[in-house]
Picture (cartoon, rainbow, N blue to C red):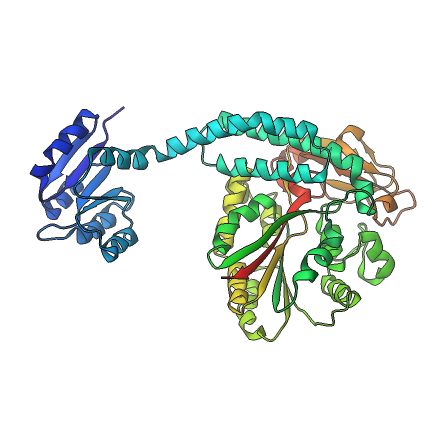
Length: 514
């Protein structure tokens, strides 16, 4: 391994000779310069790994030199060395992106610690993260094997997503593979748990988790006094929420962050209509048949969310007229953001934002998106980058400026599908890759949760003998015709409609302006 090269710029360099000898004995190579101009000249001629820069020198001062260094070498670490602890000086130095600073007189151990922070921080953090996860691995596996209630499963999912994000930056592929294996193990156990209890949950018996059709009644209405913004980001997973949370925490307090369970199918037509109506899909069809379309019918399946939501509010004694926006593209998002400041008199604003859904579905069609989001880590990063630069960020910021309480949630999540499973159905069978509704379906019963009597799952069916099937874990449905082509096309894409932790356990967040 080559020695790390240090350039030390200080007009009292002779007094620092003992420190330089100390560094050289520790294996570092040190070049010196007595003036900023001399140091800049050496930087233009040679390569260095770090610069130690005196803040007070004759001629060009340290802060001026820092600016010039950053112009030429924006990524080069610079450690500012100063006799002064004046707050304004250090604020300016930090603003110009120093990596660290030391106060004279310098202790040799402080120098070594600073160098370790610069060059070994990532390695040290990674090594500690691996040790911590290894210690917790056994407990997580035990929890997966012993979980017998929905609260335990939410705890397991939160823990696994914590480690998934913490290990994102590791270069240890083996450790990431171990974690992914544990997530797969958890999804297998979660599927068995849902298969056993879902019918009771959806019919309101037993110890049921909060589900789509009860979310707004039990979570939003009790907290809706005053002005509010309800944001429903289509297709937002819990780990994607965690990726955008730091941006929102800059101007919002998070009062509540919980998980609720999406109904089956974990698909927009079912889960989002249930969320806004406060009814199960079967309940919607019975009460508002004019606003429901069955899977085989032509036309949009989510055209009446506003109508369903207004009926929900009236049913619970609220006559407020919400301002309802459904954002399907960037341009409409920008227009919506501009409109928010003009709606200060509105008690309730609702924004349905579909962009994350666009990312997810685009991934099945666009090679570029496939490259940008080829795994969960990349998918989270793509979501964070999108959000920072999206009109939705501005929409929430504008609403917060009006003093609004912010409710943020989603209708369902997604999972990266890996394993194909064959299905055969007639031409009217639904097209979704993670659930199917049809007649005389042929499938592998080991790969699905089957529902041959849809009313037991509070689901409508246009057929007397219609069957729903929901893919488990990371399976996806493929027809036998042109099988290999469709397997290769859809494998490693993000889909929804089935049963996995990522699709079913999704965030509900309450925030207030700081």
